[in-house]
Image 1 (tube, rainbow, N blue to C red):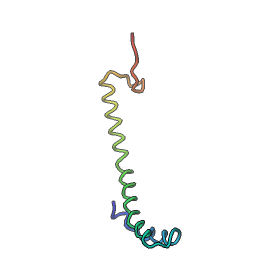
Image 2 (image 1 turned 45 degrees about the horizontal axis):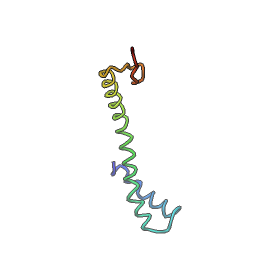
Image 3 (image 1 turned 30 degrees about the horizontal axis):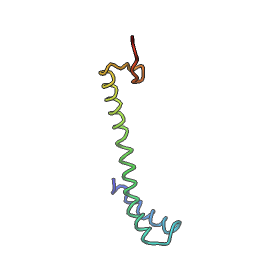
Image 4 (image 1 turned 45 degrees about the vertical axis):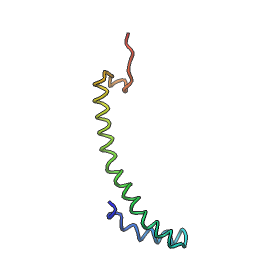
Length: 80
């Protein structure tokens, strides 16, 4: 992922120098951090849907095994 976001480096460096500050250290820091931030966002976009699906399936199985009715939205109903 980090290599896929590598082409962002030149654009970010140029944008920071043009629109932000004239400090080359800040531009270099943004140059290094931009591909890492893009990689984290892309990884989350790929992993979270599968993790949410697995969590929903696990929740359904555990709630039906515990005696909760699925129709009540996971809330226990009192019966007397």
